Image (cartoon, rainbow, N blue to C red; front, side, top):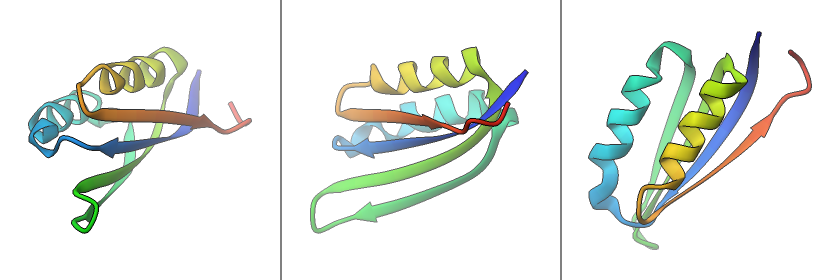
Length: 81
């Protein structure tokens, strides 16, 4: 059963963008929407991902993102299933 979630990503090392995009492409079939904001004054990017996927896929994507050096990822789940 799929769940709806929001993954918040902060990219502190912008050279990691290619790795992030590869992962997002890999999970693209589940991604409902994506918004990226470059915050140049701070030298970071902030990305929000809305995802409708099985719990395991959401956790897998979030975990893989968080393992990339210079990237922080946190996930919020809805109560609906």
